[in-house]
Length: 470
Ligand code: 5AD
Ligand code: SF4
Image (tube, rainbow, N blue to C red; front, side, top):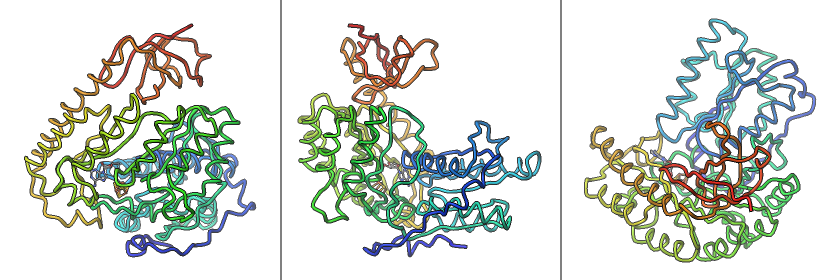
């Protein structure tokens, strides 16, 4: 048994830890069995699930749409807010019932960020003994070994590493899309924003080598992919741990040269967003003019308590620079309301900032205290009811601007990567260069292609359009 350990998880060392790849003799243990995986949380988790699916299929498992009739159910969990936690525990409750009623041989595994939490693993050991195995974010590659042990002994296996290993190149991957791909560029985060659990669950900042990233993107180009999203908790810090003399600016430049038609990247911390990066984005047509730039709060004093390392003014300066230098750029953001000690005045500053920035999209949250984070120790006397009012008020403001920005596009021609058929019959859907969802009529053969669409109508969260057949 290897349990999560926050002291270890907080440590930032330069030492490398050797990893053990799984041996070939375990291949085949899944033959004749089915699996289902539920993924919660961010794109990093979605991409981890793509690796996990490939590992399971290499072991012989086949995917089953319906979790109730699967032999193995894996929950790839998220720790970011309490509701993500509750969802996973709710699902565990349903799985327990399933195991007790109709599927006694069901194998249940829990992985992802919650597996890195000391409190969660303690709870699993004491109250969820029937969970067959738990593994963390640093040891996906150990899944075959854990499953094999579980098959042999039928005992619960818990293996969570709180130190992170070397980056494992060449992990198998079963991508969910044939046109868009996630490519990890940096793992972990060293920012330690005071509300955030990620630096504990995902470990220290570790960048992949530029050569490995480029060869992955080149392969994707050969496979016909149209879009890559470069992934990291804080992509702008890319390269800082490597000391090889290159960072995000140079990486974007290199990825651009692969001629992949579309490049996106998430998530950017304003602190590490350099002028050089803005220039590179502005210069290359295949780097999409859509930037996710979480502000978190419009009050400098709250930002300070959050440990964000920038003031409201710093954010606005960066924001204006990006708007000025990148034509037609869309900027989206994340905002937390109800952070401990946030006053009505602080909140008003957040609302004002939103009136100024007119974001194209915004993900808004009520602050959720997370185990072991610095903010969890702060006094928080704002009633939940007030926090909910603030969230509603903020949502009304930001939604108004989503619609207003979308309406400005009516009559324009926009490039769209067609992704599939929407729920509305006979309509294709896809995303514009500025990351807006658009629905329009067209032939299925266009799926996976980039086409020109004229915007005919605008809603808060999507556009309608007509295919430009010329
Ligand atoms: N409570 C509420 N929201 C949070 N986020 C991160 N941690 C918390 C928390 N403890 C939000 C931030 C971040 C996004 C991914 O989730 O806005 O940018
Ligand atoms: Fe969390 Fe801050 Fe790191 Fe983002 S930059 S993952 S909010 S600690």
